[in-house]
Length: 146
Image 1 (tube, rainbow, N blue to C red):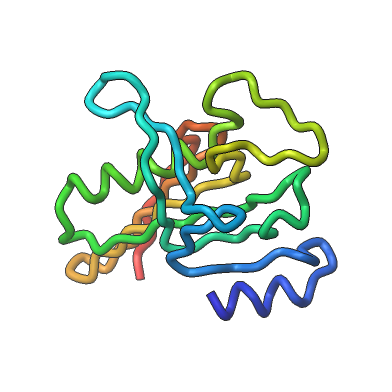
Image 2 (cartoon, rainbow, N blue to C red; image 1 turned 120 degrees about the horizontal axis):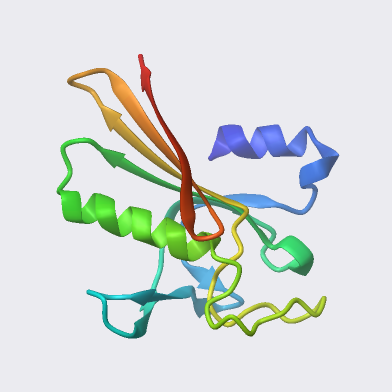
């Protein structure tokens, strides 16, 4: 987080944006997303993301930039799946397909992150798995050796 903050401070493009760890607030309320649980109707769930870059409402035209979820490879598959589903929800343009940007009002549920990144590190095999999410879908993935 500190490295990302320093990098942002060096660029005017990110003026007014902040990085936060385990942040779960949305204008004083707990951040929520809508997600489909076990193929049933959408439910509202609280959300905390490992690392986010956002403007805390200072740039309503693009408040949310990056959401990152990180896991060790030996964590249960259910936790990994939950992180990936969270990134899909956070990068969607809207939840009810009716919210439109008016220049002032932010959506009720957190969304519109430009990119979501799933980062999984495997110390045994010395690999890092990266998955990238945009507009509610996984768009790319890769593995890196270290």
